[in-house]
Structures are given as structure tokens and as C-alpha cells.
Length: 297
Image 1 (cartoon, rainbow, N blue to C red):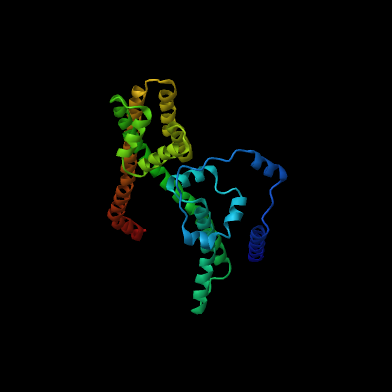
Image 2 (cartoon, rainbow, N blue to C red):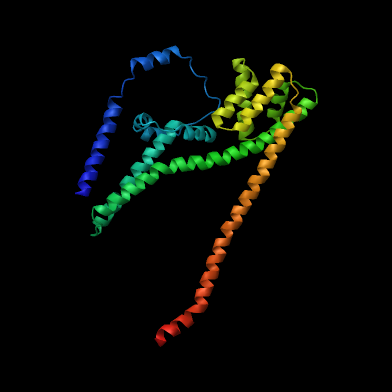
């Protein structure tokens, strides 16, 4: 009874996905009018890339997943940080889920060729579990990489603040200080900053406005705060050298705190194997005595 219900639900879900792909829902008239009347959003500063083979094999699932509201805002910000396209992410989720769903049945077919069988319940349950894991693994991978890249961006941002502060102390203007500091550094973070400053030149906007947009896209509050501080110097002539130096010092303090927390966590992880080894040694010593006591009963 349970396999029949699961197969029926799977067939219904498949037919529903095919129907959405063949006949996509039409937006309401109010939504179309609102889309026409609103000002088009500025193109994102961050550059993303899509894997051709993933989008080719999994693009049939992308509209249905977008209809479900995927990805969420947090994952979308993480995708911008990692430089991965949304379509690639959704297609990889669908392909991994489909692979996990079909893998137990392929194993069942191979065992059937050898005269063995696992029944219907085992591959069915294993397929559902593997499909759920395959659907969640890309999100976990993106979150892990985004966390690491944000930390590296903050490390580079502290060096960028020092360079800007030194250039301002030398008598340079705000825009020239930002450009010179970005031109010196190397790495993904400085590439993103240079891209934001170049976009400001092309669109004839202020560099602190594009830096603020970049901070919002990457979900890095320190960059948005930097843009707010620099805007005071660019629009009202405020002295921001002391503020930039304080922000750079705060970022370095945050880096040291994170390094100490990572070292403490690594120390705690190292204590577990030692404890297990000690318990095994105690069991090895106590084994003869326990066996003697049990034989004497």
C-alpha cells in the first residue's frame, strides 16, 4: 500500500512539473502594470557564471523551482559571493535530487542481475532519503563557501581601509584615494572593489554609492558602513581619516577574535580522539579482569 501511495504521489508531482513547464502561469494584470511602471533595477555589480552542462540538463526543472520561491534571499546573496548563477544552483539541486532518487533503483537492477533482491521498500526509502540530501547539499555547500569568502573579504577590506587612509593622509582626494588603493591590492575582494569603482565611472555615479550596493549584494555590512563614512567626506567634506583608521583596527581585532575562536574549536576537536583512545586503552586493560570475573560466575 505504501509503495503504491508513494509512486502515485511521485507520478502526480512529475505531471504537475511537466504541466508548469509546458503551460507556465500567467502573471496578473496588476503585476504586469506594476512591472511596467516601476523603474528597472540596476544591474548587479557582482559577476556570476553558469555551468553550461548543469543548466543544459537541469534547465527543465528551473522554472518549477523558481515558482516555489527558490532560492531564498539568503542563498541568493551567498550565490553572489561565490560567483555561481542562480540557474546553475537550482539545476544542480534538481539533478542531485533526481540522481539520489534513481541510484537505489540502479543498484536494485544490478542485484537483480545477480539473482538478489532488496524488495521495494528499501530502494524506495533510500531513494527518498538520498533525494532529500541531494536537494540540500548545494545549499550547504554554498553557505560554507560564502562564509569563508566573506571572511576573506573582510580581511582584504581592512588592508583596503589602511591604503585609503594612507592615501588620504598624503593629500589625495576621496575618489583618487579609493582608485589608488583598489589598484594596489590583488585577490577576489579587490577585484570586486575595482569592478564597483569601474561601474561608478561608467554610470557616472559616486563611488561610495556603488560600494554601498556592493556591500548590500554581498551582505557585508562593513563595506556598507565604509561607503557611508566615505560619503560624508565626498559630500560634506568631513574628515574621515580617523574613522577609517578606527574601522580598520576594528576589522583586525575581529580577525584576531575569529582566529582565536577557530584555534579553540580545533583544540576541542583534537581532544575527542584522545579521549576515545584513552577509553579504548582502559577497555584493553580491563578486558582480562572482566573475562575472569564472568568465567568465575
